Structures are given as structure tokens and as C-alpha cells.
Image (tube, rainbow over all chains, first blue to last red; front, side, top):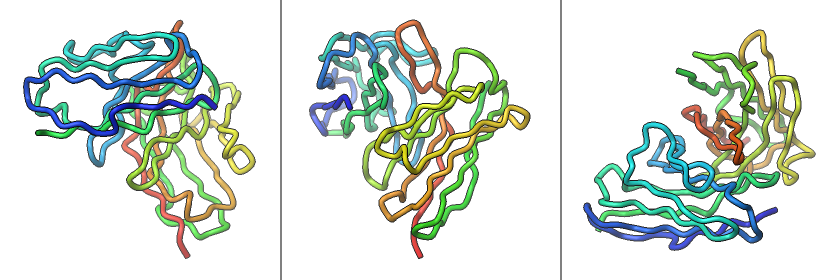
Length: 107
Length: 122
């Protein structure tokens, strides 16, 4: 299985900040990388697919980049509704696997 | 728009079989370009992919669960289902069904059900 490692596991930030979350794959996965946002008690929501494509309806302050083994999710100008847990997921090979999550908290 | 809804028992006894159904509304389960997936999340933990099925019946399973999992699809009811046998407490989780949309550059879970809590306990 391909292991997905996110860093940091948690971070604190303020409204208006820019934050970056990193996801590293244990082997090359081209651009087969997706990002999800999950709020407490809710299902995950797709933000970014194919490493850098913004899902319809997702604000443009969310940006994904990377290829191969290293990927980043950047959130510009944090809004109150952005405080949540973020997961990366690889769809390069079966089984699909997720990172352990990054919890974004209000400072 | 397409919506998914999980249904099934919230409590299953150890060694028995967990059975869940996902009903697709607002669209056809037989549409091309999508698989239909199950994902679970143990309390306080991350996400685990269980498997996926195409409307034609093609299935892919997580090897860690393959010996215990069966996915099926009922196109007449616009539903797909999960069966997980010989459950233990480690199978306690929120179970999500999701649409696995296929793109030229991979696939992603673009629509999710709200999730259903399944506890394994005697």
C-alpha cells in the first residue's frame, strides 16, 4: 500500500493567515492526489482533485500543488469556516489511501 | 443534484455480519464515469477506504478487508450495498458511501453520504 504522510498533524492559525499543509507519498503517484476538508460530525468534502484542480464551488483561496511524491495544500486568507481537519488521498493505486489528517485550529 | 444516503443497523454483535445500503437519488447509479465506494472512519481516527463497485458489477476491495467484504449493486433500486462479515470491535466506525468520480487524471470522492454510525458490541 502507498503510505500518505501529512504534516503538520495540527496547527493553529488566525483568520486572514495563509497556511500550508504538506502531504508526502511513500512512492511516486504522479498527480493522483486529492484533498478533502472535514468538519466535526460531517462527511468529508472534496476540495482539490488531481493535485491542483479546484472542485466546483470551492473558494479560490484553496490551492493545491505538487506531483510525484510531494504535495501541498495552501489556504490563503483563512476564513472562520476553514477551521477543520484536512486529508490528502492518493488514487494512483488500489487500495486508495488517506493521510492521517491535519487539524487546523483557531489561534 | 445527486445525493447519497446510508441505511442499516446501528448496532451489530461481534462475529455477525454488518450490512449497509446506500441509496442514490437525483441521478442514476448506472451512469458512466463513476464508481460507488464505501469508506469508514473509526471514532477519533482517520479515513479508511473499504472498496468500490461499478454499476456493471466490477469490484475492487481493500486487501486488508477483502476476505470479509462483499459489495453489490442493485440498479433497479439505484442502490449499492456493503456486507462485512465476522465483525469485531475494531469495525466500529462511521461508514460513508461516496461517489467515486473518474477523471483523466485519476478519481476522487466528489459526493458523500452523511455517514452512519455502526457499533459492534454484544
